[in-house]
Length: 362
Image (cartoon, rainbow, N blue to C red; front, side, top):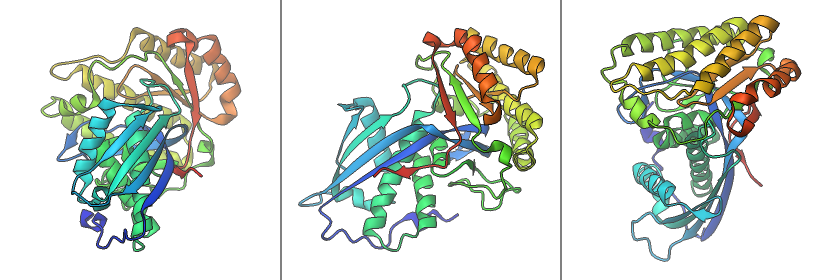
């Protein structure tokens, strides 16, 4: 993909003194994980994910035309109603990285208000929902001042811009399934943007549930950025990338034929391999907690005992995502309440399900 298509050829800001965009964008959970980067935010291996529905960031940007453009990007950012300096620094760097693709950001002062539907450090990728929400607001405004920006390219550009803020954010623009990274089995797959894969999702995955166990809500001891970097010269990196590509190929078949047993095997293998890479990095680090391991063992025992299609996955943290069909939700939620909440901080968990991506807020 030639990313020059995302550089606006014509921008008409005359007469547009004030404009507001407000969008809601969800997080996502990777089924096959990417771990390791090359170049600038390019994945070392492709990933495929479920887009979530209820775990989202809602972002509003008010664009106020400057009397005179000074060539600087100016904004104020409010998170949950208060100014947030640490996030503002990340957003300032983000705007600087994307300015060639969003030259209009120099002509307007931006007032940004953003909130999450989920608690911070909850095992839900707030960077994914946050940067995707920010990017769709920018692209929606661009459509106002650039009539040549068609819907298909707008979605691609939103995914592209989101990726430059946080890699996994590019997978939150659409749904319910997204692939990011080039793979021969997926037509139009790209390292630059995430796309809806060319597959017919089996009805068994309709309204598929994701219950997140909040095992530990503390800040991770090692950030994902550092973790990705430690994949360079990792002794098992080559085999890991090969495994991920094989799983991506097989996952397409599984999502089409609805083989939940194999779906769970791949899902859980990916989760444990991700953490195995962390534990065998130099220096090594462990993000799982004792309660994480106990919860995983309990899920496995429950599945063997009942035959229910309850499977786990993990992101780069201690908290556990439980995936299962909605048709089995009653029994599984009863099990969560009876046994698994004991492993959660303050007995907290979040119920979510598959969603379709970013939505405009009226």
